[in-house]
Amino acid sequence: MKIFSKLKWTLTLSLIMVLSITSCKKEATFQGYTISGTVKGLDQATVRLSEFDYTDRGAKPKVIDSTEMTNGTFNFKGIVEHPDRISIQIGNKFNSEFFLENSDITLEFDTAESDRGRLKAKVAGSVLQQIYELQQAKIDSVINQEKFAPLQTIRSKMEVAYKSKDEAKIEAFQEWRGQFRDLESQQQKERRSFQVQYVKDHPESIVAPWILGFQFSEGRMSKDEMKAIYPIFKGDAKHTAMFKYYEKTYDDIFNSLGEGSIAPDFKLNDVNGNEVKLSEVKAKYKLVDFWASWCVPCRASFPHLKELYKKYAKNGFEVVGIGTADEEEKWRKAIEEDQTPWMHLNDTGANHQWGVVARQYGVPFLPTTFLMDENEKIILRNPTKEDLDNKLTELFNY
Image (tube, rainbow, N blue to C red; front, side):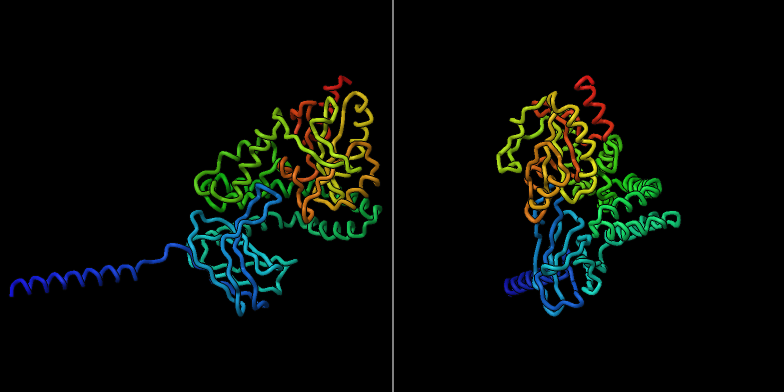
């Protein structure tokens, strides 16, 4: 009888433990993210979540997850190791961005508010998104100060001028715009000052690199500024896609493709279809110039470059023009129109994106130029007009 009672008590304890464990499992909360989305104006589409990759201008976005939207709604569930800003593609026409973190997130879109396929996401449940939007609002308040009001008309006038394809109208616009150069510079300086200060105040924030954005580039910052800002980022901020872009940019400028390093060799076809290898270009000094027919600053630099070519070509100076992110027909037409006498190589990429060589050189913008010696050692990277003039005078002794 005692044995039976003991056995009964043991079974009862076991049952209590099983029920307790089961109860605990039911109460355990999901540690990842859930996304509930709605799209007004669209019933069905494939929805994809993708990671940004700014380290390679020609790379396709890396898809994290995808699902089918029905009746204008979609859902995702998963776990993200490092929260970050990501891209969302809705079908083949619409896209947007938001911060993905391990929380319950709701997204709302309205196709009627599309700006050439870009949708503004109404996001709830993401603390990072709230922080980002708050700081963006502050940036807007900086650039929209009353003193900068005259700049608001520039974009619309520029579009009208360039769409006209009338050289006289374009020149007139450029002359008119000249009066606002100092005001534009002041606006950009105040904006960048706010962004840099945010990074200094929040060095570990996931949002910080996205607030600074592409201000971290040699076209918008001096090298000294970049050297000062780069080591500020710490912790989670360094796991973001934007900081990965900073890493590559920093390495390109100061290490692998910086002054003193050896430029990578390449082969491309010239205007006649002949293959040209950079290392086989016979010249004491070579200026590798990445450009495109649509790039106004690129073509605006050609008249002065013609003067330099005329002055130094006979002594061993060569310009290697590399057309990229362009249409071949427009590239050829621009060469004829501008009557540029140096060699031109075609680096046209798929869908008018950066070509293979432009990607190999980490070209950040157009024009991008590298002055190198006969052994492809980089002497100057993206020199100013004055820097290039002074260096050539020094190299050729006149």
